[in-house]
Length: 247
Ligand code: GTP
Image (tube, rainbow, N blue to C red; front, side, top):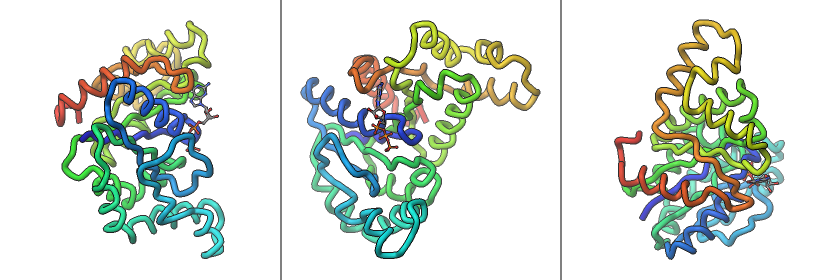
């Protein structure tokens, strides 16, 4: 059983990717289950096999504890851990080749809080797992935002101790020229630095390190239009076969 965590900034397309990746994997005759870990999501386009809202619902937490939306989300993520053993026994009932995990909209609440890290470990147990980190094309087409997304992806890899595949999502919103440019930035620090213009010594070193440490190229997909999934699936298989070497 393989666990695939779908990660990314708010609105980067995690839920759409979860649904369409499931459809794609089912077409490949892979048994696939979905875990929804977002306690604040209102509508899901798929039927989850496990839904964290059955245990903790951010809107109920908001009402019950008189909290604002952000505090309610933080409290909800932390409350999930108080139900850990029930959640684990539910999740252990799931049988599938691939389990896709749709993570909360606010990535920092999930990845940067100890609770998120513990829940992700609890879910995957000793099984092989990886994360898909979605770059929203709308943000990634600006060079400085692209570097910020690379940093976010690296810090999440460190926090969650998961191999990460960087996925450029929503490529249907890009022109061919924009797509080529973004992919070029991912391949060479020089391309990125050319675009940024003058950068200080610290940024130069940081960018070189970030690009050098990428274990694979950015995978361009449109989760809405269903393009790029063959390449993405091949990369998922490559990373899972490589195991810890890709950490
Ligand atoms: P939160 O959990 O609320 O942060 O969002 P999310 O990351 O789960 O993103 P979601 O799948 O809800 O998508 C956000 C918006 O982006 C929706 O309007 C989607 O229709 C749109 N979207 C997602 N994927 C794509 C894509 O590949 N192309 C385009 N054009 N839009 C997309």
